[in-house]
Length: 407
Image (cartoon, rainbow, N blue to C red; front, side):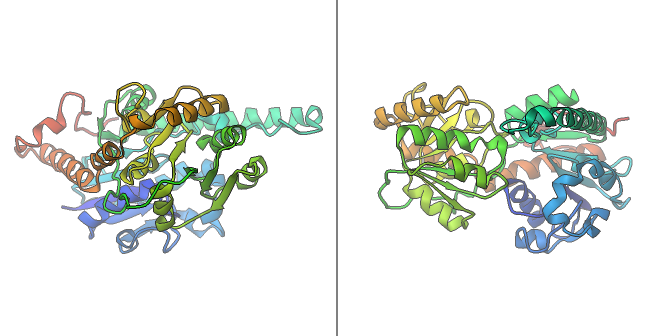
């Protein structure tokens, strides 16, 4: 099968790249298209692909500063030229990958991590005003107001482009029920849910004792809300270890009290070791899906999470359903995290490490590979007019988008 794979950018190894890796293994002869690529930043299977990049690749320092080039990304996506002779195009998109032009008549399946957060749901968290806390904020307010107006106008244009290019997709796959609803609201399109893969062969329990510390594992960016876990543990006097790096590192270090340790970036082996020993993972952000809570559960580690977004689909709240794998809280405030920690500590017998492990196994990499490949085979079969195996026919049910190139 002649396949083109499309990804937003390849500069690090995170959840999106782990999804892409599965199809790179299935289609090693496919062409891979992306806005930019930092060599050696992903998996061996991805790095072995024939990778085509956009004109952004030639910008000095682009792998570090790519986020600042958002206004140019739609043009960069349009500049990528896929071959005409294709049976299938698959985009992995949370930004602009789905906007890469696909030849007429070629089915385009988008594995959608989310419609652009910074253009739709999370502008305030991605682009804070910069005024708060400034001693001269009354002087700078007119400047910031002008910047905000211009930025919002730009994001409105990006959002309209994002909505318009959704018509280029024949079938959407959502990574969670949360994202499925966003696709419906933002694009007016139906989608199927195929949950991302979790490496349950790597994230496993160990015969070690749980220790008296809580854990956060996250990129240190605003929407992850790691400050809530830090402030809660400061107030409660609980030990907290934070693993991760990002633009908020200095701000979070300034918030950290004597019981909080920021370790910076750590290897997967170090993360697994901490998940095996931590009292619980604290997950305070609202995620599209969130692989880290499942990696924690794969290690038998309980999860204390904000009860919105993907965590509601992956964490079983012990205080609402009998035995469970963690505790959910309903407000993104330090007091709510403190209360959740207290409820967790008062109900240890209702948390089951064995149930946590079984829950993680439901999201295995093999399950993801099987479900995604079955879906893609069904799309190509229906496009070509071939009969579809009875085992595949339920995949393309009434909630799938029509197999036609829109607009």
